[in-house]
Length: 205
Image 1 (tube, rainbow, N blue to C red):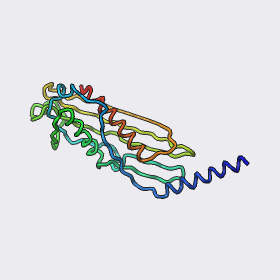
Image 2: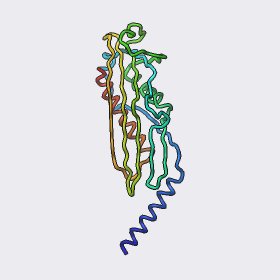
Image 3: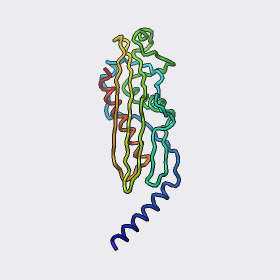
Image 4: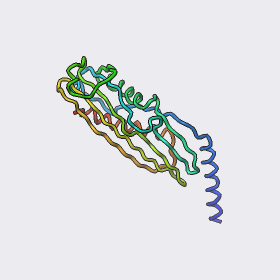
């Protein structure tokens, strides 16, 4: 009797999962950096005017930022919003920087060398290389295993110092969930972005 009951439960769960996965598609994740605190000393470090050089997405696959394979083999893909990813990350910094008294100015290019800082019309310049930005979920019976990996190199050129400061940032997370949803993926990415940039803006160099 117990065996029959478990088989019935598994059958019903299978129908539910199959139905929910039938509309496999591409979803967008709204990437936003929302600081958990202010940065009162940031202006002293980088000045009040910051150039934003083009951020670089150096991943091999740049179209997606996530993938979920269900227990029944149905796959969903995930993109950043805005898109492409480098735009999403750069635009997410604008509001928090403005709130901390930093005016941002986009520039078309920066060679990343200290010698070029003297020609800047601003106090500092920021550029980020995105090496890895990915979440992957694999469905199993009653659970989903999710792995997240983010790797960035943040370059900050400070004119008054005559130096370029670079920070290599890597974050890897692995969790087991009852079900992986787009909302869960979005929150995970945004929590990690907050962790990375709260730490960076608290101590840029």
